[in-house]
Image (cartoon, rainbow, N blue to C red):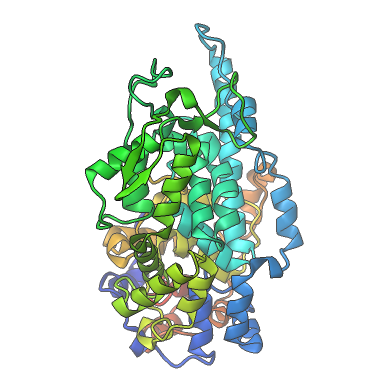
Length: 502
């Protein structure tokens, strides 16, 4: 992709880090309203600023913290109901869409193609569900937190059968607990087949145990290590290599079921034949050998740890406030996390009423990730989304494919990770395409045909777009927009330094 000369001045602004928020022109909308929407959602849709200003920021925050109180869009509910694989359990998905041929039988090209098509349907519907909800749902804080927690408990879709399971993982292990208790979220991810497969714990076996054979030959420390380093305590959380080994022993036998094993619909299966039943010392606490209960006890210890509270509080402060959050805020959130037994909603409520959150120097200071940028652009234009494929494709081009981060740490949400000339080049090209109506978001994919390509493009109205965003542009950006032809103004708005930030 190349950037046309008329966009080079904005690209230069962006590459230099944009225009400082303090230089922005006064907006007719209360800046606090825009700040609340930009942080608690993926950005305003047409009419959102006026609605929140009318209802008041405090009511908006409390509404978003209680997503079930917000009526879901009937249109969105109808779209989601048509995704047939969305509510299937892992067992159903693996049985119906991941069937293999009998051992020793080589698949024909037709059989291989049919299997790939079945698997692709499951993944495509998971993508559609995520992007439809992110762009359309009024329960925006829930969507923000689904993205946050999926990234925190990252699972890579292209590892073996996880392509069939990432959608179920999000629906069953992430989404129900996104604003609940951290311990419930931790337990749900630990038991889900997607995580058990991704970090190899399904193979974790006590050496010398009756079940130690074939692929189940010994300890696998992958999940135990990432559980402490990434999911709970943090890299400086005070654990040792001996704790990693002890935790791996605790989680021996945790896996997912095979056809001849008893299991529930979740697919989780504890195999006592592969478990280490000896006593363990984990984080200076003795855990008696008792089977499945050992893992639950270890998760309790991790969820209650002050190191976990600090690690999670830092990440939340970094996401919602600034790339380098104030230590006083992290301390405050850590105390709240501990005093509420890891109540995510309570911690967020504390964060949203903190003085650091409302410090004007943090307004429009977080650089959007590609995901946040693409979703916010779709929302700002007010596009009716029926076809999510263009959004999925642009995320790949922008370097942030959905469910596509290979290693467990997940995508970063800081400016340093995403601000570079090539990435800005691609964002400007995307801004140009969506503003000019090139993205066929409102067309159902199966109904597209060659006639769709010759339909007149529906350019995004620049005045409406500016009003949707609160006219919160610097004098330099306003001048660049005003001096451009009308059909280019929306692209300049979406490519502006101000829109790159939230």
